[in-house]
Amino acid sequence: MDVLEDSLIQIMYRNIESVAVGWGATSQQGQISTKLREVTVPIMSNIDCKRTGYTSRITDNMLCAGFKEGKKDSCQGDSGGPLHIINGSYHNIVGIVSWGEGCAQPNYPGVYTRVNRYITWIMSNTKDACYC
Image (cartoon, rainbow, N blue to C red):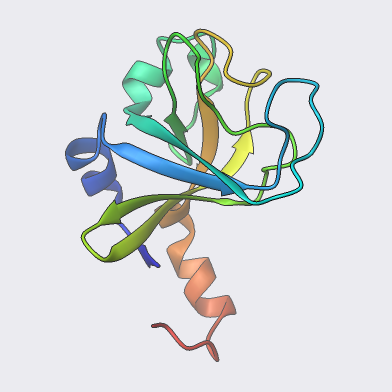
């Protein structure tokens, strides 16, 4: 999976569907899944995310994805999993499941670590890795 630049995420991928993958609960206070699951959610701009219940808690190192009315979200147990977009035959990682208020709650989208903000650290700590 490739990492995308911040400007592309903010401009080109606003409202574009992204996919979060994990083994977490399928509902708030629910049981952890016994199989790997995915959820498709639109990426929000940070400006739009700050207009939700999170207001000033969202930083430039974060990315929000989800629906203002709730419906779908990553959940407890999904933390650390990828948020990616599908671009043709490529899957581009844009975030890492981080936190949120409950699961799929109205006005509280999922909050993800903005991967491209850490690309220098990732590259320096994976020098011996094969980038495919």
